[in-house]
Length: 89
Image 1 (cartoon, rainbow, N blue to C red):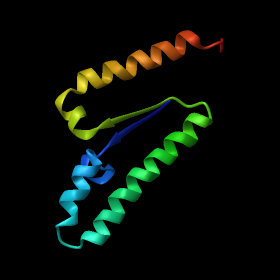
Image 2 (image 1 turned 60 degrees about the vertical axis):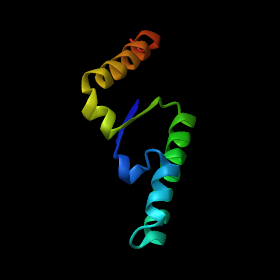
Image 3 (image 1 turned 30 degrees about the vertical axis):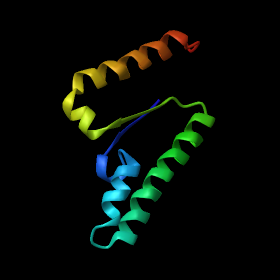
């Protein structure tokens, strides 16, 4: 299992809204490219990991800050489910 804690800004939470705000800011071409590429790379990594049999969980930093116990519970549920399905002695 791969668990990612993604920063809202750097990984493009609410990507369309974020890009629209960045488009009007300082050094817009750089930031538009940077954040878009980060989000694209995240999707690519998820796909590659899943293709290799990994379970991928991604959580936004704000969600973790707002409800760390709930996020931990979600992770624990996946871990327990995977353990129950495991055939490894």
